[in-house]
Image (cartoon, helix red, strand yellow):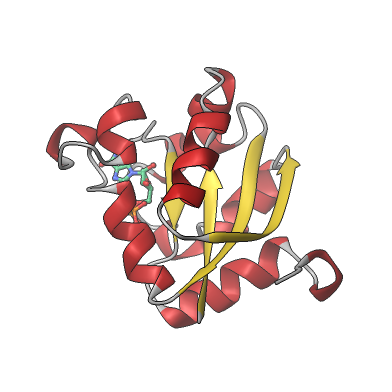
Amino acid sequence: MEKTFAIIKPDAVERNLAGKILARIEEEGFKIIGIKKIFLSKNEAEGFYHVHAERPFFPDLVAYMTSGPVISLVLERENAIKKWRDLMGATNPEEAAEGTIRKLYGTNIEKNATHGSDAPETAKFEISYFFNALEIHP
Ligand code: GDP
């Protein structure tokens, strides 16, 4: 069993899509072992996305991620990191495969509905950034 970290981003929470996305996550065989709704501060969002600090879109990304509450998740299943990336689809919803969450619910390359860790080290950092051990229940 592998764990990954996911976020239902502000655009999706704002449009009341969280329920549909959570249902899809469970239907696809993930167990939701951690879940909480939070409203990130600028500092918290910058820390989370530190690897993108030099990218031109970084200020926009931080503004977007602090524009409303998000739902943060720890997901568990076999091969969870790749399976969740596959289920989300490509970063740009226009390029995402049919049926993927970003294709269904994303608005544009920035407001793309969900986040998912891209590697085991990232998943470890991201889970610990949002959750402590007492908040995760396999
Ligand atoms: P991900 O791993 O598929 O989420 O993609 P990245 O790690 O490359 O980018 C992180 C997040 O930054 C994406 O999910 C988008 O919300 C945002 N993003 C990525 N590329 C762009 C871009 O070219 N412009 C803007 N405005 N946002 C972007």
